[in-house]
Amino acid sequence: MQSPGDASVLTVSQLTRQIKRMLEQEFVEVWVSGEISNYVKHSSGHHYFTIKDDKAEMPCTLWKRTAAGINVSLKDGMKVLIFGDINVYELRGRYQLNVAWVIPEGVGQLEIRFRELKERLLKEGLFDESLKRPLPPYPNTIGIVTSPTGAAIRDMINVITRRMPSCRIILCPVAVQGPGAEAEIVDGIRMLNEYGDIDLMIVGRGGGSLEDLWAFNEEIVARAIRDSRIPIISAVGHEVDFTISDFAADLRAPTPSAAAELAVPDRAEVLNRLDAYEGRFGRALRSQLENKRTRLESASSSYFLRRPENIISNQKQLVDELSSRLSGALDLILERTVSGLSVLEEKLTALSPKGVLQRGYAVCRNYPDLTVIRDAGKIRPGETISIELWRGALRGTVDEVDSD
Amino acid sequence: MAANGISCHNVMTKVKDEKEQTFEELLENLERNVTSLESGEVPLEEALRLFEEGMKLSKVLRSRLVKAEEKIRKLVKSSDGALELRSLDGKAVEEDSDDDEEYD
Image 1 (cartoon, each protein chain N blue to C red):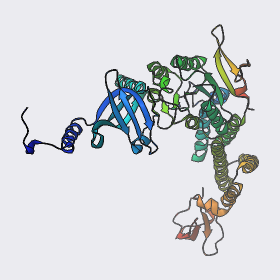
Image 2 (cartoon, one colour):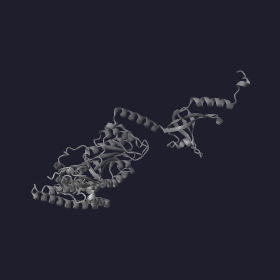
Image 3 (cartoon, each protein chain N blue to C red):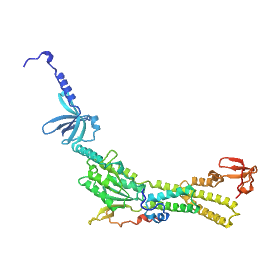
């Protein structure tokens, strides 16, 4: 070997820097699978460990700030997928993997299965918006497919019975995780369909890891949801958890409690609505009666020469009778209405002459003495009359009289 | 909601089948009655009938809302494969099919 000239001799630092530059340019954003060993969490908050397979190993660093964003607790023996960059630590002359993301290996496979299934069912049209059914606004009976123990069923029962105590709940108890859970969920959905007398179904469970929620990512569960005759709300895990079941269901609720809120209306609101209807009924009937009375009164003054008086008397009697039955009904309504006072105010307004005028009636008077005109036969063409309206009054000359 | 085969226009049918009607169907009848009454274009006798029927519907709806009984059941498959309702603690219960409709 030839002795080198001075110019071609590198210092350790120089060589290391060249190696660093080469490695760090070449190995950016790599995925590595392997098993964790020699795991240490330093008091500084940084994590150090080795990732290895049966033939090689590589030191890894996971900085405190990165670790905070990774929701996985690492331990020796764990099989993981690591995403990161190769970094050369010049001081010790070693290269290491600077970790940006860690996925436990099993989960990585689940995530891949999730994406593939979602893609396939989406293409098939199982998630089409056109398949989503509207939920019944006032369900009488709600079926729930979930675990009989745990917070989810408790929360749902609490919310439903608080909002709508008259709603029936039929629980189909199933395992929601572990082997066979998906088959039990499918069975539960079918049993409630077979039972029949159910307006709406909630299928779900409380929060958990991706593995815990996995049954709701199984194809048979998604298909059972889509095949259900009864509309289904899915409620799996927390807000951030999306499952295949959620895409297949008629509606996705972020949590079981939220599903219960979506399932039933609040009774107090519905009762308020009934109050409002009853008020409208009372007002509408009163205005009808007043309307008829006014017409009857004007008829009784102008028709009496042609018509037998008794017809009109009978009609008047009918109106009087109806009025008294109405006031009985109105008393009931008033008792019920929370805002009884405002209704009373409206009642008074409606009964005053101004109230009648507001609805379009007018009072016709002689001018200038302002006596009320009830009979067209008493007026001759050319006379001046005054007409009082809801707002303001009109004055004019009579062109023609039809005293009929 | 779609009509369940009951004619919406036939008043007699509507009243007769009240117990089989869903809450939203009854509520729709109520809405229809109040709108007709408010239109002011019905004869007096009809107006009164609409009013009385509306008040009755409202009463029925109220009673459906306030009835509260032991309403939580679980559905299980018995050994012969038949579906049956049990209380949550597993006891057999009478099928309470009639308690839904007693609101008078």
